[in-house]
Structures are given as structure tokens and as C-alpha cells.
Length: 451
Ligand code: IMP
Image 1 (cartoon, protein in one colour):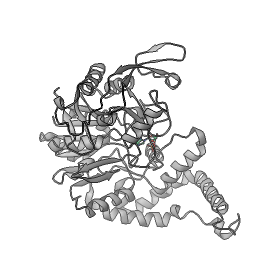
Image 2: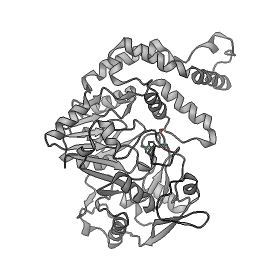
Image 3: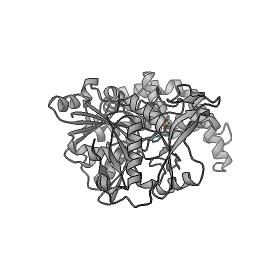
Image 4: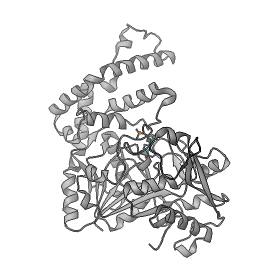
């Protein structure tokens, strides 16, 4: 199957990295098509832990090409940090390619992300504060800086100036805030308004320094910059397998997720075409990844959330703390209404269920099979109206739990009957097969199921 898309089927952090790493064995190219360093993958290989935010999970396969596609927003400082980290760990990055058309996350995007969240106060989205939203906003406004601009100092300077100009008001407010905070912290007692120190602009926004720094990023990134769409076409046209690796997940999709509590890109299979530069007919197979339960970071509706001891246990047993921000994730039962929605939205062919081992010893398991609105209406499908979703309560089916350690299971028959029944129930409900099951953090801790 030459074109394979891998996407998150819930609210992110489903363990896509591990599954991509496994499926990548058969691929020649692995391309990320959206998101930025808001994502975080942890891959455990031979006991060694690798964390990536931007670089595709396929990088650990030295002979394969890893691509950061045009749909990704790239913080060059973060990318270079990851490249350096991999080199230090002895992993070759010679086959890493970066789309010349990908947009950059600039220092002002990061500042504006934080400022926007602070301004929203208790209504904040809970973004990762990595500048993702503002970078995509500039892209849509045609004020974005692209990777290729790093290679031309004159263009870079002009574009940075043009991008900064309409943000002056917001950035001025930021400077005032910054001065106030510094004053409150007693860092600069004499810097009252009007003094020279108070007038000092934020050094992170100095155009001259920004241009210089980014030109040097360009020099370092140049060997990796390429026409990555063509690279994908060449691989696909010669019958090689290309994996399109999504970040985040269906319910965080800008159009189809729980807006505004979403990310600023489209993490669904359809977006792989735009974000990598291929056509819909290049996609042959879509894999969704779901945890055996559900988690969510940041604000927004989460019908099956558990705010009790079981939720606490899942967080502890599943180490549910973000790779990117370290934030504790919210946890809850598997939501089959939301999952069935994600399956259809992505037209998934197969599902991988990760972290099944985390449910060990929890007791009776529950899966949400419908919601009930606050007026008492039965909702069999994911409601499109946000207010309905906000106040919907899930109705559950109970399934037997299991106490056995399943970390050593490698084939279906190694799994306890209750675990098999749990997977069977999910597959039947969503109408697609569960093909792969994660039973522990290590790469080989998986069970392939018959289709
Ligand atoms: P942003 O993508 O940083 O703008 O954050 C928007 C929302 O998406 C917030 O609720 C984040 O917590 C969430 N989000 C972004 N990236 C991820 C991810 O990789 N996993 C889980 N949630 C994410």
C-alpha cells in the first residue's frame, strides 16, 4: 500500500509515534503534514527514550527519508535543537528533508500565543504556547515567513518588518506588561515609565538581531531544505510506500473538532494531501490511533472525563503528563461516540489501540455508547452543536476488566479473554478492525490482530 496516513483518533497523545515507527519499517518516506512543536512523540528503542516535537518519528530508520512537509509550522530553533540532540545520540539526520514552503514560527508568534492566552483568562484554550496559532494565522494572512526565506537576507528582512507592523499594538501591550511584571518582581526598581530602561524594547523583537539569527538558522538548515512534494511524488510513482504522519488528532481539528478548543491546523487524513502536496488518490490506507481510554490536555469539552479515583489511577498508570509541556492530562473512559465520528471523518481503514496495559486492575471497564442531552434527548452521534456537547452526559456499557499483566503478550491468544472482548466490542461498534494493540511502552510490546 504506497500511501498510508496515520492520524490521532481522539484528542492527541494516542501514541502515534510508536505506531508510525513500527509501520515505517515498510516505508521509504515518512512525512509530517501539519502541526508544529506542539506535538510530542516519545519512542522507546532498546530501552533508550527519544522525544521528538518536530522531526518525524521515522528518523530512527537511517535509510529512510524523513520529511517535514509544507503544512507544518517550524520553529527553527527547536528543529535545530532536535537535530543536534539526535546527532549527539548517534542518530544520522542526513536523510531529513524540510519543505522550502513550510512556514516558520517566529519569536513574536510565541509571545503572541502566550499574550493571547493570558488575555483570555479563564476562557483560555490551554494552548501549548509554542506560537502555533499565530503562525498559522500569519500564513492565512499572507504575512508568514517561509523556510525558503531564510536563504535570502533581503527578503527575510522585508518580510519580518511587514509581519511585525500590524502587530505593533499587541506587542506594545506586551512590553508594558513585561515592564510591569519586572517592576513587581523588583527586578528593576528604577525602571518606572519614562526612564531609559523602561523604554528598552524586548530584545526578542529586535528586527536586526532576528534577521541575523534567522540567516544563521538558514545556513544550518540549508542542506535539509528541499522540494518535498516532488520527493513524495517520486517515491509514490515508483511504488514505494510513503507514510503521512499526523500530529494532534481528529477532535482537535480546526474545522471538525471542538472549536475553539482545537489546534490551528487540520490533523485529519484529508489534510495529508494539502500538507504534503499529494492528491487524494495517492492515499491508499488510513490508520487511526486511539488509546484504550481517553485523555485530553487543555480546555474544552470531554464528555467521558473522570474526576475521581479511577481517573487518577489512569493518569498515574499511564504516565499521562505531556511530552511537550509536562502538563497533567485529563483522563476518562473510551468514548465510542467520538471515536466513531473520528473513524468516519478520516474514513479510517484500521485502528491501533495503544496503552491497553494501563487498564489492568482498574475493575469493570466502561465505554460510552451514546450521549444524553440535558433535555433528555438520546444522541447516538457526535453533536455538531458545541453547547449540546458541553452539557451532554455519556451513557456507558460495562465490560469486564482484567488483572493480568499483559506486557508480555505478543499474539492475540496471549491476551486475557476480557481484554480481547474489550477490543472486539470497540471494533464492532466503530465498524473497522482493530489491527494493532499496544501492551507496554517498548517498541516490541505490541500485538498484531487478524483483520
Ligand atoms: P496549540 O496547538 O498549542 O495552539 O493548542 C491548542 C489545543 O490543542 C490545546 O488544547 C492543546 O493542549 C492541544 N494540543 C496541541 N498539540 C497537542 C498534542 O500534541 N497533544 C495533545 N493536545 C495537543
